[in-house]
Length: 166
Image 1 (cartoon, rainbow, N blue to C red):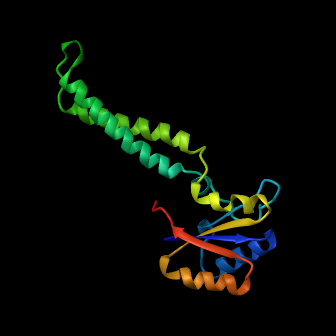
Image 2: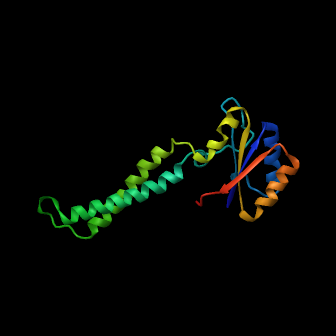
Image 3: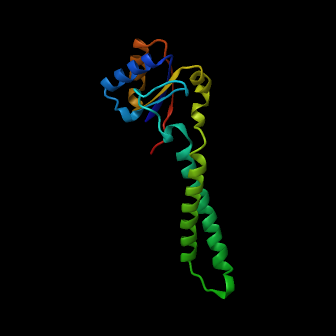
C-alpha cells in the first residue's frame, strides 16, 4: 500500500476529490482528512488516531524494548535468585512477556500524544486553511489516482510515501 498526501485549497475541492475517489472504488476507510481547528470538516472522512499520531510506531518500539528488558531481567533473576529461590528457564519467558506487555502499554500511552512526523511538512499549509487528504491505495494504482486527481483539480499538491503495514 502507498499513502498519497493530497493538499487541497478548500473544503469544496476536498469534498469533490473524496467523491471522485469513492466513485473510482477507493473505500472511505482509506481516506483521511485533516484540517485546521477553525474549519468544519464533518462532511469529510476524518483522520483517526493512527493517522495523526505515532501510535503504531510506539507500540512496536515499546514492545521490542520491553521484551529485551524483560529478557535481560529474567536472565539476571534466574542466575541470581532472591532469597535462595530456585528459578527455572520459564522465569526468562515470563519476564520477557511481562516486559513486552508493559513496554507496549507505556510506549503506546506516550506515543498516542505525539503527532505523526509524516505530517510536519504540511503543518503550515493546514494552519493557513488548506485541507490535507491522505489516501491509502495499492501501489499499482498510484499513477492512475494521481492523474485522476490532477486532471480535475490542478490546484492539488500530491506527495506519496509507503504506508506502514497493519
